[in-house]
Amino acid sequence: MTKLVECVPNFSVGRDESVLEALAAAAGSVPGATLLSHSGDPSHNRSVYTLVGGPEAMAEAAFLMCRVARDKIDLTSHAGAHPRMGAADVVPFIPLMETTMGECVELSKQVARRIWEELGIPTYLYEESASSPGRRNLAEIRRGQFEGMPAKMLLPEWAPDFGDKKVHPTAGVTAVGARPPLIAFNINLGTADLGVAKTIAKAVRAAAGGYACCKALGVMLEERGVAQVSINFVDYRKTPIHRVFETVRAEAARYGVNIIGSELVGLAPAKALVDCAEYFLRLEDFDFQKQVLENHLIK
Picture (spheres, rainbow, N blue to C red):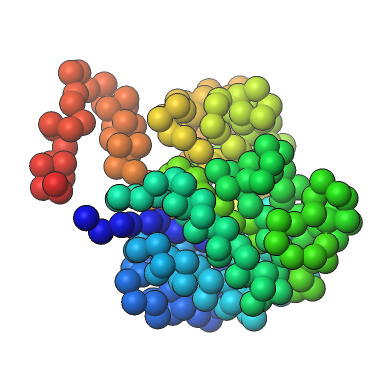
């Protein structure tokens, strides 16, 4: 059976259509790489691309996209709601068919080394690829963002895994790693009070005592005048989407605020979405394997 790997690189661009198209073209130029989806968010000033293919194709596509990002994104003039430290901010590899996490770890190390050697961008390894426990969490690596990285990298504990202790002047640094599937999910609140979103994000965020495998930030969607709780589900099997959604709803109600919408960024496993349907529809004796049509068609 064919080996399949998913790659979901995030880039610090969400407003320049020409750059978004150039990144998509780079991904599509690699035989065996399929671009499933991509989206750019103006408020976050960030884009997410989802690709699948064989390991070699994913490695080449990710590298070519990082080269486009280096050449076309200048972080010295970049501003957006989402934290960032690099033009190509994070490049994760996710094992799919006939591929192990260990193989994705090795793939991430190869790509991280190449980004430094050929593009001159220092790289960090994170999640399953991390070189030390303190580097598993992407948020810890990215703390300080692009502006704070020059001083941070001079600290012995924050020397990059590949490259010297000097930030690329316009492209910053890049994190590369291997991880399980991640779900990026945003909840928009009926308020322009960023403080409410930040308080709610802290309530659900694992690092602050909230839900396991849940990362959350309060951000502002300036063009809509709406505060947002931006969430990453690192493992939806341990903390499902609906559980956090209901908590956000309850916490928002304390401030007289409603949820006005939500957003799925990129792709999500079918099971995660069906779990939401099962919960909200109160399905009885539901069997995901037997009662979802696609499970009988895709064998």
